[in-house]
Amino acid sequence: MKNHGFGKLVTFLNQLEQEKISYTLAHLGDETIMVNVAVAGERWEVKFLEDASVEVERFVSSGEINREEVFSELFAMYSELESHSAKLTQNAKFSTTT
Image 1 (cartoon, rainbow, N blue to C red):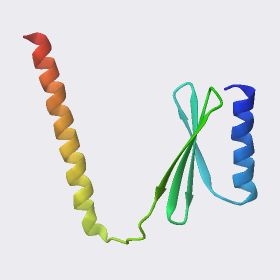
Image 2 (cartoon, rainbow, N blue to C red):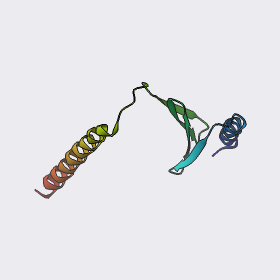
Image 3 (tube, rainbow, N blue to C red):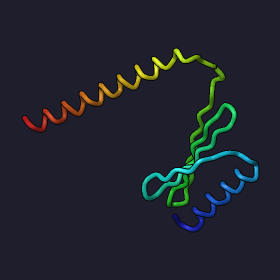
């Protein structure tokens, strides 16, 4: 990471700590450090890239509270995605062998 990009990251982390905002860090490949910030009703993904650019993605809650019954929706969606992905992989293998 270039010095000015690193400075942006350190400044941001210092501001989070000064405001007592909790965060976690993740290393994404060789060129990106992501800061995950969770505050009431929002989750932020702040990516500091090697070229000193910064990308921010915010996930804002609708305020709707659900019960554990919605787990079935989560697993149904995930199973559908996995099944579709497996079919695509199988089709790709079949088309390269014929």
